[in-house]
Image 1 (spheres, rainbow, N blue to C red):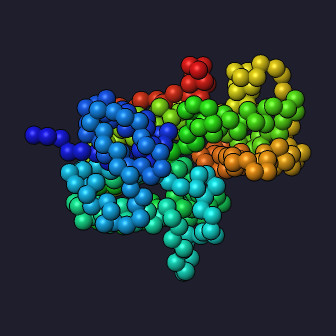
Image 2: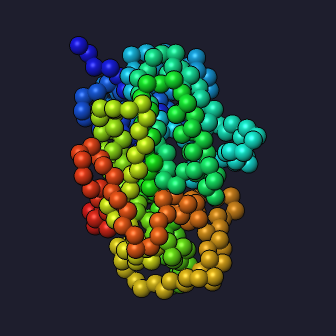
Image 3: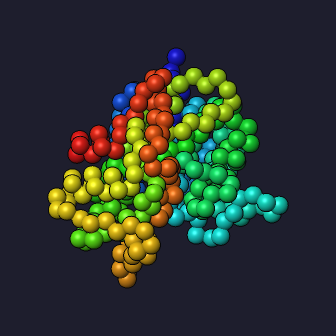
Length: 309
C-alpha cells in the first residue's frame, strides 16, 4: 500500500527546505508549497506554486495528502504591519497570515486531511507585548477550533542557524559587535536558542509520531539557557577574535536603536528587540529541552552548535 503524501508550506524557506530534505531522505512523497522562490529539488518532492489566497486553490495540491506542515509565515518577527490585538470583545482584524491559515484549514477540512503541524513561537499569548506573538496565538486558537482530527502545535524558541544573512540571531549580534563598545540589550534576560537543524528534526519527527489526543502543544528549546552576555561573548570569540566591551543598563538600551538603524534605501534587517521577544527566560534558569522524537532526547545547545561551524 502506497504511503500518503505530506505537504510543507513555505517549502522554499530555510526551515522549510530543511524539513523537506529530511522527509525526502526518509523516502516520503512531499508536496512543497512555495510562492516566490523555487524550492530545492529532491526525488519524490513536487514543488507547487500557491499563494494560499483561497481554499479552492489548495484542493488539488491536498489530494492524497495526510499530513500538512505549515511553516509559511510573512512579516518576520516584527509581526503584522497593521495594528493587531487578539482578545477583548471586538474581533481582531484578520492579518494576511491568519487569512492564509483560514484558507488552508478550510481546504484541509474539505479534503479530509488528517493532521496539521503548526510552527508557533515560545511566548505566544493573547497578552504578549510583541505583535508577532499575539498573531501566533490567534493562529493557534484558529487551528484548535478547526475540524481537523489531529493538531500539533510546536512553540519554538528563537531559531538560529543557516547560511549568511539567513541566521538572524548571529547576524544581529555581529552587527553590534562591529564596534569596540557595543550595547548589551536585555542583560538580565536569557535565551535558549534552538538550531535550525534541530527544530527541523523535531518537526519531521512530529510527522511520524502517534498522536493520542486531538491536540498536542509542544515547547521546543535549545539544550541550555544563556544570559545575553554569554551569547555575545561566544559569538565575539568565534567570529571577531578581538575584545569588545559591553554597555548594559540605560546607556546600552538607548544606543541599541541608533546602532541598529537601517541605512536609507537598504533592506530592513531583523532587530534585537524583535529577537528578544521570542522565548525569553530569566537568566540562570535551565530551560527544559524539548523532546525531538525519542523520549528524553536533549537538543543541542547554542555553544555546541557554534563549535561545529
